[in-house]
Length: 172
Image (cartoon, rainbow, N blue to C red; front, side, top):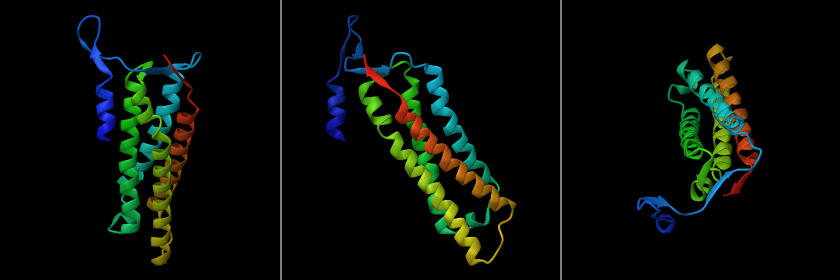
């Protein structure tokens, strides 16, 4: 990691006005790609995943009352969602032109983060089923909301993964 940071620093220098600027390579969306459509394709699934994760948890299902095999994957899922938000902000905040190293760090890692978040959502789903089966209880409306939320989160994150992988970039 430290070596990569030093490599980045070598790509900074002074521009024509004498100000510090990034002089390295950039990438941009391929010709014909609508930036608004890309932003919607990236941020809409993430919004669905975030809402589907947070709303059922606010209802306080039984598994959130100290059951580690429900809580631990849920916390990991939340952390991965924050990581995905961070990567999308870095990727989309720069506008049409993105530094090559930012593109590599964000677009390169987003598919893996999305899959990991979807897996955590499904493990949380399975953990709640195990909890209810061991307690011999039928799921109530709160647990059903958790099931729907976790399934929706997994589907949304996989859709986001496909959207990120489908975006064409070209050097500029």
